[in-house]
Length: 101
Image (cartoon, rainbow, N blue to C red; front, side, top):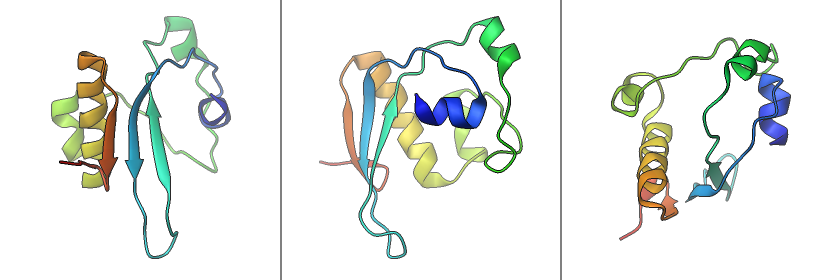
């Protein structure tokens, strides 16, 4: 909730955990990323969005089938898995954006 408020200037209700992704990098070391269900924004929330110019230049909404053309593969995989978790009600554990088998 803090990150949404900081970067978008709004405080929507944040729902359940959808994805946990272990995503270490050589430059940043080990890190675990979490994706939560942000729900559906109301018209008032959409109108109140104010971007932190040091963090973001713009925002847009895309359907999941389009996401691979708008972001890096690792994030696109993570978002695709979040949609699966949302529909199945089962949180997903990933490593580098990919499901662990």
